[in-house]
Image 1 (tube, one colour):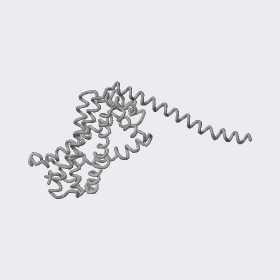
Image 2 (image 1 turned 60 degrees about the vertical axis):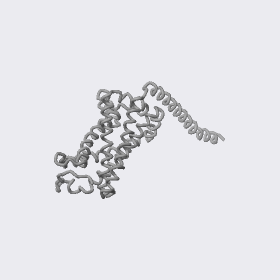
Image 3 (image 1 turned 180 degrees about the vertical axis):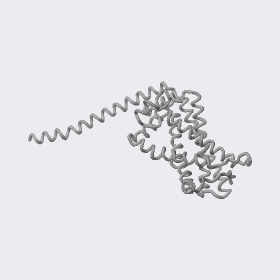
Image 4 (image 1 turned 90 degrees about the horizontal axis):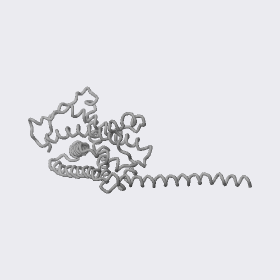
Length: 280
C-alpha cells in the first residue's frame, strides 16, 4: 500500500471543506474522463504524423468536420473539465505537505512527483493551447493577442502537418514539449492509480500492487505514443507536406464547387417545372 504524506485538511468553514468528499471525487473522475481520455486520443492522433501528411490530415479533418460545433464540444468536454481539474488540483496541492524529508518511501516520492508534474502539466497545456490554437476562436483575439509576435495560433488545421512541423522546428520547443508530455502522462498514470483507491476499485495491498503494473504499463505506452508524435513531427519533410496539402485543398475546393453547382441545379429545377406548368 502506498505511504501517504502528511497533509493539512482544508478548513471546514470553506466551500471546499464543506463539499470536500464530492469535489475530490469529481476531481479524480475528471482526471480520467474526459481529461485523461482526451489526452490519450490527442497523443494517438498526433502520433499519426508517423504515417505521413495524408494520414494526419485525415484525422485532423475528421475532428474539424464538426464545424461551428467544435468550440462548443471543446469547451464542454475538454476545457471546462480541465479548468475544474486544475483549479481543484491547485487547492489540493496548497493544502498538502509532502513530508518527503522525513519519510523516504516510494509513496511519498510519487506523492511529490504527482504534484510537481501537476504544475508542469498545467503550464505546458496552457502554453501548448496558446502556441497551437491561440486559446480562443475569436478574430480580434487571434489578430491582436495570439499572433505571430507572441508565437500563438501557429497550427492551421487545413495544413496540419506542415504547420505543426514549423511550429515545433526549434530544438528548445521540442525539448519543452517532451518534458510536458512526459509530465502529463506521469500525472495521468499515477493519478489513475490513486483514483482506483479513491473509488474503491483496488483497496487491498495485493490489488494495489497489480494496479501498479497496470497503471505503469499505461504510462509507458502513452509516453512512447507522445514521443512518437514528436518524432513524427521532427521527421516531417515540410516541403513535401505542403505539396500534399496544396493538392488536398485543391481537391476539396473542387469538390465544394461541384457540390454548389449541383445544389443550384436542383434548386432551379422545381422553379422551371412550376413555370412550365403555369404556362400550360
